[in-house]
Image 1 (cartoon, rainbow, N blue to C red):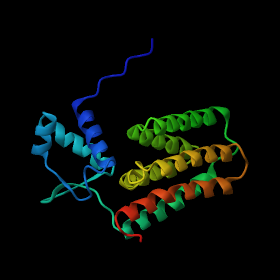
Image 2: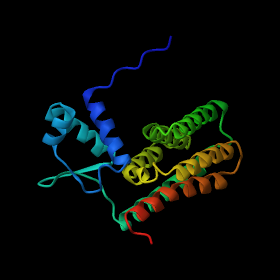
Image 3: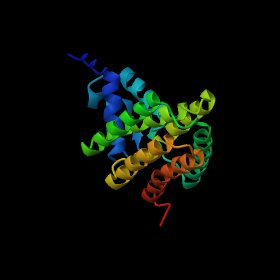
Image 4: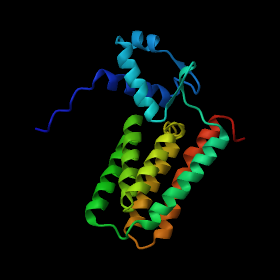
Length: 219
């Protein structure tokens, strides 16, 4: 028998529930979250709520400001475009540094994550989709061999969490992302870093465009 999964802590329960609310659009950009109200909803203490909000802030989903409280994050069109210019540049450079072809162990790990991502899409488990996608890209860019570059890419990805959530309930975009993951796998077995870098950059664009459309910045 496999090891039993540890039960979630109260903080994790709150974090997961609020993530679902943001993913499904039950919480809107700039909507204020009140600790006392959340404590009543989850039948827990304000200390637990405060810890959960800290985790969501670190994940790039909330913003906490003095005298304003905690609100769901929102980016302007300019901020989105600047963030994705940075992500384009960083991920292109990382892809160009990955030694090709990759070894069997790294390929198998990425293939397993692709399969998990695909299964989660079929099951419409959005948080699992997001988690598998996140780990896939973390493993991928660690292959570049530059820990500092991989860490910065991860930080930029966290800042883009809210933007990516805009496309996480669009089945067509999820299927497109799935197919692009497998294209990345194919490129990793080839010897063309240039093609790999182009796939990685084009893979970023649908979530950016979807977020801008939803916020009314594209017409």
